[in-house]
Structure formats: C-alpha cells, structure tokens
Length: 170
Image (cartoon, rainbow, N blue to C red):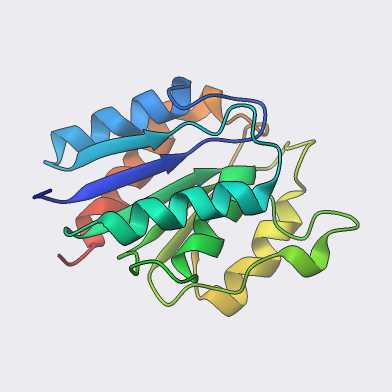
C-alpha cells in the first residue's frame, strides 16, 4: 500500500460508513489521504475490536492516522498505544473514556498528537471524561454545542478534522 491512510473506527451502535465517517472521509480524500473504515458490527467486545484494528495497523506500510467515535475512540486509542505500528495521530469523537464501572479500562494517552471533539450536551459519554483524558494526553479539546452523535456539527467537525490532518507530519 502506498500513500497516507486514515482508518475509521465506528461506535457500538453505528456502522463503518455512518454520517460522520462519510463526512470526514470526504475531508481526508480531498487532502489526498486514502481511507479505510473497519466494520465492527456484531462485535460488542472492545478488546476484539482493538485486536482487529491492531492487525490492520500491523499490515500498514504507509503512514496512517486513526479516527474513532465513542467506543471507536476507546478502540483507536488502545490500538495507537498497543503492539501495532504507531499512528501518526489520533482524532477522537466523544470517546468512551472513564465510563462508570469501567474507568480502569481507559487506555493511556498515545505518543502522538491527539484531538478530541465532544458535545456539551452528550448524554451518553459525559464531556468531562474527555476533559479528564485531554490533560495527560496534551490533547487539543474542542467542545461543540451538540449531543453524542455530533451530527448537527458536521461542518465544524469537518473543519477541525481538516486542521488535524494538515498538522500531521508525514
């Protein structure tokens, strides 16, 4: 494989080509990145999702960034710090960090640039969880007037992703 890659990881209740991923994939393609979106449908175990993404990372011969939404945010962060090839950056959308009863499962900060986008009105993953993760990760934290899905903020989300991709050295 040649070029630069963006690999998307969707959330627990969505699919590999949902509204957000389609919008961000368009941004990536316009910036000359190739895109992949792994399908985790039917996989409820986050560890199995991490293993699938780590296998994808290990196969890469080109630079890549990882993008994850909700549980997918947990997955890409764990894979970025795991045994696979290292990601150049991680872009997270309302990542499922520090969830009640599972706080200890939140992966450590990856050794690459991190941007987190979260909605102020998220009723699935508290925005405070992203703020808590952002500090030790030295992550850019962007708060939007939206809910967990962030679909009312696609223009702002796309603009942030464009800035993120532009900041990644390859």
